[in-house]
Structures are given as C-alpha cells and as structure tokens.
Image 1 (cartoon, helix red, strand yellow):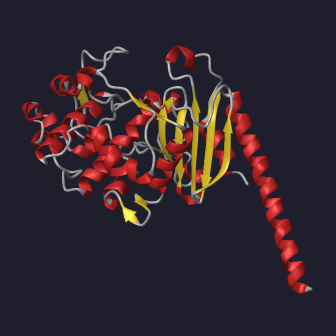
Image 2 (image 1 turned 135 degrees about the horizontal axis):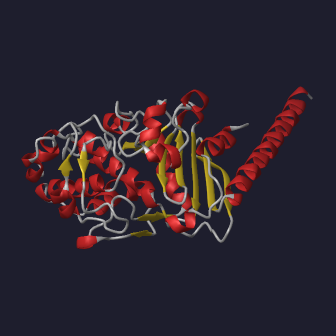
Image 3 (image 1 turned 180 degrees about the vertical axis):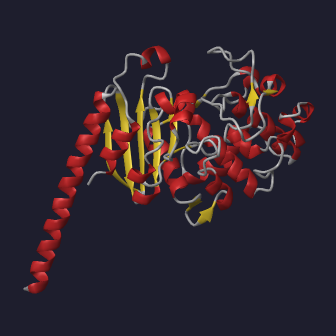
Length: 343
C-alpha cells in the first residue's frame, strides 16, 4: 500500500509540474507573440520544454538571423584551434600581410578582431548595404586605436576573419570556404544546417549576417555550445578556446568573442556604445541571471544560452529590416529572460 501511494503521489507531482511548465510556456509564448515573434523554442537539460509558432511562423521555416550569424565565427575559430590551423593570440598580420603596414593593425590579435576591439575602422563601407567583400575589408581597414582599447561594433572584422580563414584553410589543403568548414566540422555532426546562407561580394558566405536557420536547429546549436562543444561523446572544438568566447574585454565586458554577455557595464560605456542601449539591456544585470550568452540580430532575433539554468532559448521574428523594426513593439531581453527563467 505504501508503494502504491508513493507512486500515486509521484504521478500527481509529475502532473502538477507539467501543468506549471505548460503555464510558464504559455506566458512566454504570449510575450513573444505580442512582440512580433514567429517562433519560440526552449530547451532545458537538452529536452524540449516549450515550443510555439505564431504570426505566420512554423517549425519548418528558416528565418534570417541577421547579426545572430556573427556568433558562428567564434565557433569556427574554436574548431580551427582544435585543428591546429590557428591560435586566438596570433597576430592577424601574420596571415594577412597588408595589416602589417599599419602600426595599429600590425599588432591586432585574432581574439581582438573577434571581440571587436581591434581598433580597426572601415571607411567607405559604413553606409547600410555597402558590405565589403573579404578582400575589400582587409584592404579598407584603418587602425584608429591601440588594439584592445576600443570596442566598435560592425561587420568589417567578420569579413576580415573570413579572409584569414580562407588563407588558413587553403594552406592546409582544405576547402577554403569558411561556411563549408563550419558545416563539416560542427553543424553536420550535431545534425543541423542553415536553410540559407547569403553570399555577398565575391560569392563568399556573408559571415556577419547571412545565415538563416529554423528555431529548432538554432536551439540545437545553442545546446552544443551549452555542452562545452561536446556532442555524442566527442569534443568537436577546442574547449579552452570555446571558454574564451564568453570572456568580456576591458573595452566592453558585455561582449566576448562574437557573443553578447550579461555583465556589469558602467554608464559611460553604455552611453558610448549604441548596441548596449538599443540591442540589449542584459548588460549590468548578471547578478539577476548569472551567466547568459546571447547571439543577437536585428529584428530581435535571439539565441540565449543560460548555463546556470541548463537552458537554451530561441525566439525569432520576420522583422530583420530596420524599417520594419521601427514598427515592432518594445523589446526587453531582460524581461524576456526573466520570464523564461521564472518557475
């Protein structure tokens, strides 16, 4: 009788937990839907605990990630470290000699390039729609500050990284396409693929903002990151290099190597960096959430990895273009993550 009652109590507890989880999912889905969301996927402990599609979204639809694409470059770098193709502390100019001609650019490391603290500017390519090719980005770069002292958000460094990866891959006798390398080394083993990856000048994959993924596949990629780069018992990328992706810089504690972070940021820095004002309000709130790593794109495309809660959260919209963003309801990463983490 005691065993039977215990079993019934356990069943009731499981049912109550499931009901609470469904209620939490409904609240999060409503928040997402009201703010132009087309997809929502939440994983906890690697298990799907919440999924919703609204406003024309579906499980099969892939959506442009915009700058959410940038975070794949960090994973490419971590895979390349494992393969012995590069180190995060090597100088970019050792591979791209043009950068050796500029006194600031000469000393830029790969880590500084990917943390957007290289001090490089790309005059002539600031206007929307004027995205340089890999080679154009390398040639156009001008050093404006000592490496590591100045954070400047933009697409140019990722195109430079594309040029560097092409040289590294070609020297190793491999397909020089950085996207093909990412697909072979990481995405194929974890069972995901982009629904599209836009090519820009030169027919090469647009590394700053070209990828489109379904919500489920983007979440699975986030789960791979949450697991420290391991999948099915295999370490797919260098673990130490992966950890460095989530370390902020002195110039911007809220940005690692291609990933946004929940980290304290002083008022002066928030005032100087527009993205900390309009792209994310997580900066400065690490005491509330613990660790949060975020891939973020225009239109409020979001992938959150929350190690302390063992959670991955994806939300997407169909509003990547800035003109459509202007009509989107107000968005708060802080409010959304807080709601997702509420029990």
